[in-house]
Amino acid sequence: MSRAFRHRLEPHPVRRCLVGLTGLCLAVALGGCAALLPRGAAQTGKPWSDFNQAHAAFERIQPYVTTTAQLREQGIDPLVTPNITILNYADLVRRLLPPSGNDIALDPGIRDCMQAQTACRGYEIDQRHIDRKRVGNFWLDFLDFRRETVITGWRFNMLLLVVNDRVVYKLWGGQPEISEVETTRNPLGPLQGFGQSVLGRY
Image (cartoon, rainbow, N blue to C red):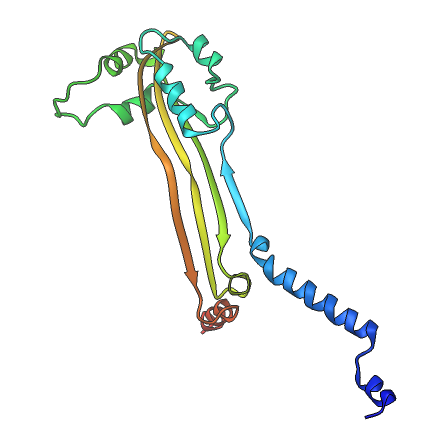
């Protein structure tokens, strides 16, 4: 085989370069597909950035000792702090008093609140941080065949009863660690919703 013939068979240097760059870009794109999956977060405002901080703030509150001024120093102010619900006397009666006829001993703080009537109010504090991250195969997710979402975070709820600007009762609850996985499978992929919409017309 002559040198000139072999030269015609060999790919052009520029073409080889383009092919190499294309392969490199494709490899980077496929390798970084997971980073393209959407993610989101839902969180309330301050005063706490995690569950431990919220629980520590709750422990510092002492019934019949802590005042509303001291609550404000901790960042608990219903007029400023987001996601604090002010409960009036009627709200508290519905939530805290047992059904008529049930002889249940009430906490002294609840009893004092009920006796104070309209002079008592409640602070319901709901704090949370939820992260949602889609994981798995990018193309299966992109084409809607299979979507997997990892959910992590925490929730903290606190109820305070206040009479004459002093806390008389406190209660807390929540989830220190949230860990869930949501998986959605569509055998028809992007056609799944289309088929359901067509069938819905008949």
